[in-house]
Length: 299
Image 1 (cartoon, rainbow, N blue to C red):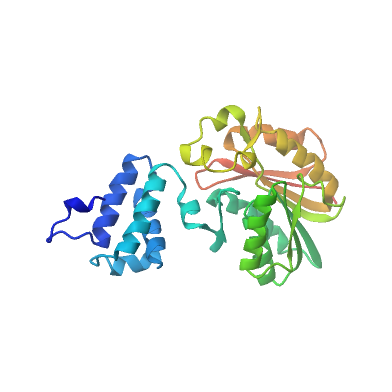
Image 2: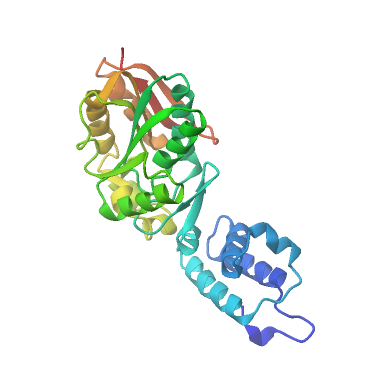
């Protein structure tokens, strides 16, 4: 975005800057360069992305250009857009994010959908635990949607990382749910009482050490490894989660967790070999890949 190439007849309008940036980010490996450019520019301009379309012919002030250039430089180096703008949308809600937590992704919304489908049938106080909560996106969304359904809820958001838990607390406050979502520091379900939960939800670490080295740069170099890598197999933490989930769930309770499509069969087998769980079901994501496992503890 060199100003030296600008001529009186060719100013650096918003449209021109977006076009240049789209090509620049495309060359640096972005899978959504135009979207990245628009999100970053809207953030620099402190406006909604849709507002840019009515302002394409405007030439932004120098302070906006400077902020935008710096973010583009960092994005081209691989830093995720969500970290650059400090937020990410999940289930139509906006969540604060930073380098201490994973960036919420659309695939994880399937956990919320599966939980809400079953939550609708529950009466009385419902206890939900979101394990490896990170940004708190699952816990906060379940709390907000559960209240909208008229449910009485108690939601625990658990994470081993105090830094991630700090982000979850901010998001609970942001959505005015601090009185319902309790953020608890701990290793998986360690802090949770036996037979106390109606739902155990989780997007746990499920990447193997070898897979981690193959992840795209923006994930490998910027998102927290603690929230990604489970061990040599990728199933180590999920195996512990299943075992602890059985102990913490009430009879008739549900465990719902995300996994990699590459370990879908192995995760399902972990549930099946116990001979205890029922209603075991794989949920596919929008790409048709097995992404979420659901199982019930018998009544």
